Amino acid sequence: MDSHPIPFSLLSIVLCVHASKLYRWYKHLLSDYKRQQARGELHKHDLVLPGGETVGVPILEPKHLGQQMAVDEKHIDGEFYTVLTNKTTGKIAMLAQTVRHQHLADILQPYLHSRYEVNVLTRDLANTYDWLGRTCFPNAVQVADKFHIIRQALDQLQAHRLGYRQERLLKRRQAWKQHKLEAKGQPFRYNEPRLENGETHLELLARGRYVLYKFPNQWSQSQKERAQVLFRHYPSIKTAYRLICSFRRWYRKEFVGDPRPTITNRLQTWYAKVDQADIMEITAFKALVERHQGVIINYFEQGHTNALAEATNKKINTFIRNNQGVKDKDFFFFRIKNYFT
Image (cartoon, rainbow, N blue to C red):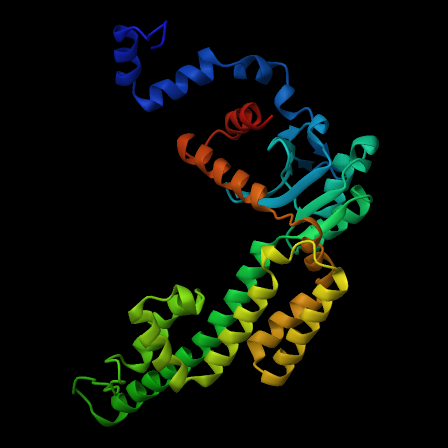
């Protein structure tokens, strides 16, 4: 039992206060926001460019630079921001209203000693963050975000499925145009044959998207039946699906710590299978993996991912919802800074 329970009268007041009123109380009375605003502390780290343009830097806390860092971009109120997060503590070291490498380098340039202590940097595949790692964190091993890579793989698999669906939709549009020329005033009917599971080709290709996201052992009975029909009528989707599943198995966490040559040889075997299949979308994904092979394989050294950066993004989204949007940016970033630093 708590020795200092909240008085019922106080609890009643708290429960009865409207959210917008509580928001104003915190902003104007309960927090230190007004004092910091008056002293100009909210923009003290902003970067002024030679032409007079200002790059907002709501958070710059070099004390939060550690050995393991994560960098990601975040869309806030129509602008893209770069978020640099300490993977050990979850604290934000930098939040800047830019995704340009040179701007980020200028912001971090004074903190030479802290930057050199970073030995792991997880990121997505954006060139900006590649150069940020090379120039600002030269001692860090860069690791591509595993979940970003898997998402790219699944997107290309779905693109292959959608290609077939677009072909079917094109046939229906052509039938509609022909109908307008030949059957004036008559209602348009486009009869598609039903397949063995009772679905049309368009329905099968639309509902098949959920099948392709899962491994076969995760399918329900109805999904197994749909997959059999889908793969029977569209064998190249089956081939593409198997190749993506094979890549996802190559990326499994259980292989973390395996010798790098072993990991590389397995990937080369997968490359050969993709070349043999000759499916445009999967070949495009293979080219992406080849371009970034080094930072992708770095995952298997210690299993680092960018999951913390994604979690930080979700928390920022929560602040956006609770802050009634970002109508007052200064106060929004004031709250973000208080929470994450």
